[in-house]
Image (cartoon, rainbow over all chains, first blue to last red; front, side, top):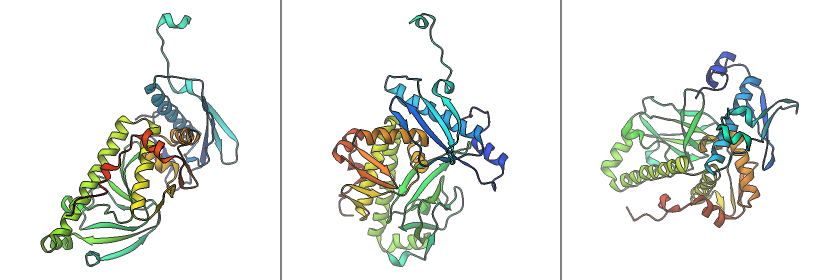
Length: 107
Length: 217
């Protein structure tokens, strides 16, 4: 799978060098179920790679939900550093491009 | 059985002990700890294809295949035993019953793989997660590592997500769903089975594929 930046995760890791210790990011999820707090976090080379992880996860979540016959794009992922500092937010609708038929736009 | 072991050794957690493609002259028996089989993808992700509990051979199949199409890694600190293929060869000639037991073991691996295939192809994330928790409850219970209402399961969420083919963030949301439905809780590396009958039912889990009561071999 090609990630949103066009680089694979492995290429991203390699471009940073394997010896460098990667920072940890925490991905708190806000959606219909309320807040799902990330206690464990994931290592990623930089903020761009962390954003890619968020986007990939949103797509995976939405895909599972669509199989149940529902699509709710109102959620977001808040990415934090281990200091608690919020790095960025990724809205669900930023993770997919949505095209609707003409007539449904008026509903 | 003990006579088959050429060597036992301790291996730290998260070490790849067998790499895909390398020539193998011995099979690895897990004596203590948890291990997994996994495949690396070119984009840096990986899929875990099976978990191993003490008593499992991580690669009895390497006896006939001589190399693996996957890697084997320790998930916790482990004690492993190495069984040289030449000893297995001799054992198949002198102890045919033991040979049949090993054949049973590889057939059981195949049955577990089929169940994971069904999970990855047909179960939704929550059902898939529930099915894995049910499987590990049975398998760890067989080796005395589970209680009726829970068991220690020292995987990170990332590793568990790699078993389930979803991302850790998706898993985290799925775990919240399962917890709030009062079915199961995975916290501090412990699985608490809050309502096992309902968990089994929502996962469509049928332990028949684990062949708990095989015919005498």
